[in-house]
Amino acid sequence: MKVGLVAVDGHNNFPNLALMRLSAWHKSCGDQVEWWNGFEHYDRVYQSKVFTFTPDFDSVINADEIITGGTGYKDYGTLPPEVEAMPPDYSIYPQFKRGIGFLTRGCIRQCPWCLVPHKEGKIRPAADWEEIRRPDSREIVFLDNNVLASDFGLEQIDRMGGKPTWVDFNQGLDARLIISETAKLLARLHWIRFIRMSCDTNDMLPVVERAAAYLREAGAAPSCFWAYVLVRDVEDAHQRVMTLREMGIEPFAQPYWDYDGGEPNLEQKAFARWVNHRAILHSCTWEDYQYPGKRGQIL
Image 1 (cartoon, rainbow, N blue to C red):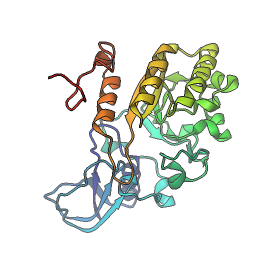
Image 2 (image 1 turned 90 degrees about the horizontal axis):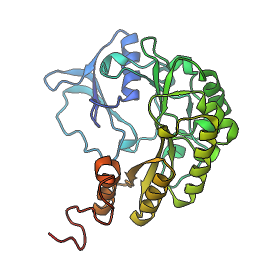
Image 3 (image 1 turned 90 degrees about the vertical axis):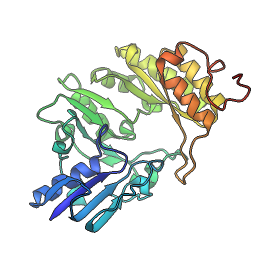
C-alpha cells in the first residue's frame, strides 16, 4: 500500500504525533509512507488537523481513500489501539530532535473552554517515560494535559528526577496541584527551558503565586517560570499579565478560539501580539500600544 500524509496545520515546526504513529504502523506492515505529493497517486491519504482555526486543505488529492481526523475536524475519537501503541516515526520530522509523547491521557477538570474531557475522558496512564525517550536524544516534550493529577504521572516524574534527561511539559502544569511535595519532585527535573503553568482566570493568580513559591523553595530556577494566559476579556487578561510579571513569571497570551468556528476579535489578537513579542511588551504599555483598528487611535 502507498500511503500519503497531510499535516493540515503544517509540518515544518511542531510534529503531528498521530501522523507519526500512523506512519510507524504502516511501515511495520510493509507499506510505503511519505508526505503527500500532488503529482502522485495513493492508496490511502491521511489528513490530520489539530486546530479548528486552521484553513482546510483544499488541494485535489488523487487517492483511493482519504481519511480525515483530529480535533480540527471536530473528530474527538482516538487512533486504533494497535496504532496508538506504536512508537512515533521520527524519520518524517528529521528537524525535530526530541522525544515526544504522553505519560498520561485525560484530565480531572471540566474547564468549559477545553476539549480534553470530551476527547480523552478521565485521566489514566499512557506510557512509562523510558518508552517515550529517544535513544538519540536527551530531551523529551510531554503533551500531558494534567500529569500532576495522576499518581502514575507523579511516579514517572519521580523516576526521572536527577536523570540526564531534559523535559518540557508543554501543555502547562496544573498550579492547583503544585504543593510542597510536588514542587520537590519538579525541582529535581532538568527543564529544556520553562516550567509552564496555566493562569486562565484571575482566580488562578494566588494559586500560581503559591505554586511559584513552592517551586522556588524547592530550588527550581525562577527564570524558568512561565504561564499561559487565556484571553477572553482583555481587561481581565491584562490584569493577569501585569500581576504575573510582578511575580517574576513570564506570561504567554492565548486568544480564545471557539471550537464552533468563532475566532478572536481584533483587540484579543492585538493583546496577544503585545504580550508575546517581548520587545513590544517591554517597550510600551498596553494602553499606549497602537494597532490597526484600535478605538480612539490617532493616525
